[in-house]
Image (cartoon, rainbow, N blue to C red):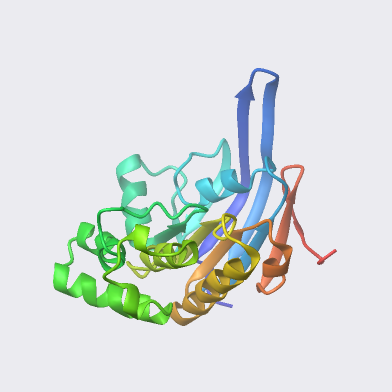
Length: 229
């Protein structure tokens, strides 16, 4: 078996609230291999977002280690964490967060331009991704001219623009109706497979979770294999 893209060991996260300390992650272990799509389920407040934020180097855990592409990222300074995020990680959220004044094509190209790629090459990569998501004819449309499902597919393309090795998706279809949710997930799944990305997808949608390679339930701060029940 190849080296995991993401390896988490003993991850702990505690928040201090008015009611006292809240331990949402209690020694989480997880490995995700290249090209593997892993689901994460659990009720609101169970710690799914905390796990994704830690894995994406957006928050510092209170304990444990996070290794991405063989590099221990746990104790990196903020500048180094930012470099890892830009080069290695793509994010998809429940809300698309597209820039309203830009076209779909420009929204997808932006991460590559921020990374220093010339505009022409960045737009070419964006066009390939949008075509792969069935949005070839919508590239010159602004977000307000797109449906909710189309906007979210643009967000998926943007997350994959820099050819990340790890995709982290936090309820990527949670704001969509069931039919559109399935369409967006199918697009995400197919493109992630095509790109060979390791993906961790948090979702409440058990029907979608059943199509992933592995699914874990976050219960009482720990991961348990989900049996589909």
